[in-house]
Image (tube, rainbow over all chains, first blue to last red; front, side):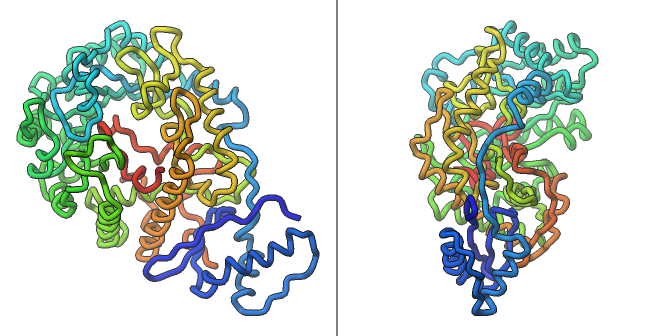
Length: 481
Length: 43
């Protein structure tokens, strides 16, 4: 009698039928007849196996023989996941956190001069009425904590976050000069995300001199951008952003070409073809990396733009796929590139046979993606974690390793039982943020969340297979995108 | 049963974290948004 079970999922594109095999992590193209027959055949075959009989398998049809051939090749084998976690033991995790942190993100200020409709901070009355700034001593402690925990990193990165970080430009400038003076041998790159309305000549000159990467929020052409990206007086910001971009380019064309990136947020109303045309045709944007984001599926304040419906999501998905396929699997438009990047987790998946251990879904190794520090010095795994999930404070002892370890244990202990029998266990990208609250497991919506994850993973597999049908080499060298 | 990308560009093993696919707000996004990766692959 075998331990474990066979786990797989079936899907189809317009042209072909597929089985995703969890045991080998392979995507198998099959005939329609096999696709339809496999469930019942394997059920009958394994029923005999489960009762421990040694009866030989009786193959009656060519399809059954084809399935047997696949099994003989090692496909659709038994999965028996017994553990979930990082590394072999916790000491390796502790060692990594002690020496290898790659990135520090500093919440310089909670103040912002914009009132973008989809920003949660716009609707956070406590934050709006008393926006706080990071103190100099907190900033210094954050830098010291980060630098002492990253001695094995040859290249470190420090990001500035807000609110609008340029409202704290003097603090940002002081921080960059401080790091350069205090750690003269360290290779540190700087970047920040800005709404682009406060980039004056002095600030630009400083950023050019210190080679800072600037990520400018730009949602597309004026009619799209100004719909939701408003300043505190409720005026659109498009013209000011474009003027700032021209100022940066006037200062240094080379810097502009290599260090300016864009972040674009898509809402249900976004005219997707216009958006693509803008980033393709606008000379200030052409050739620059654009990160595409969609507004959260269920924010509590969708009055200004409505929630994404299933139809909206399908429309976006189809537009991305259309742009990918139009370019033979090598898109040049930001939306097409975003679509390919969304499929990268499928392309990059392991091709080895499933063992007895898996990593905790899409969870990062705590702090090895980044260390996010709030205005008050609280430490988080990233800027997306809620405020009640802190794992230390830079002013009060630094990183709380116990809290970090507990976070991982909470996630793994509560996930393993569901994940070990789930066909998506090797592709799922759920993370702490989805199920951890107050550093404790909070999986009340677990069943629904997992069903959604499986549905989206199946959609991604379908899109991936559709792209491979057009161009089998589509994902061979996408890491430079 | 024919694997469509048997060798591919393997970058991950099961005991290696999949954090490469995580898109941050701070590196190219802000506020209450969800990455397209998340849109497709997250609960």
